[in-house]
Length: 140
Ligand SMILES: [Zn+2]
Image (cartoon, rainbow, N blue to C red; front, side):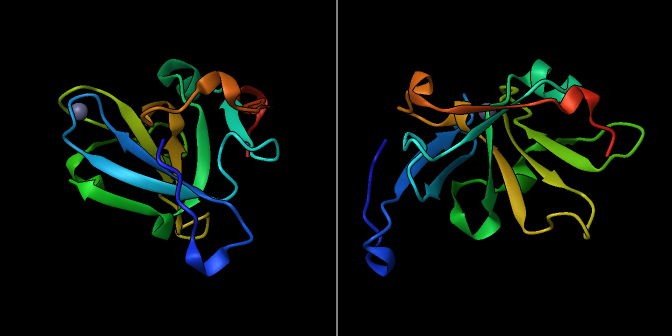
């Protein structure tokens, strides 16, 4: 993890994380304030059918806080599923790493990405405060 103070908000500590799929086809940075290891930060651990299979531990990040250093979302394969096809799940076509998901509905969080923090380098997953979400029983 590389930690950088943002000059625009010196009072609010932030951290910039380097993420990549396993084969490094895509690389990106994600800036978070507070840092993910801050006691007030929460990372979502959801039990729905797709999160449990992909092992997602995710955070919601405004699109503008994700910077692609190599490749873009368009270099990933997109998976949606019935009945709603409301969320697109993006994974690397080469190595299969599930990096992001994003709403396909322009009315539903159009400017956010759900980012899988497991693809961050040098993030101590055991230091995270996980928020258990019961997506399995959510029918929204
Ligand atoms: Zn890859």
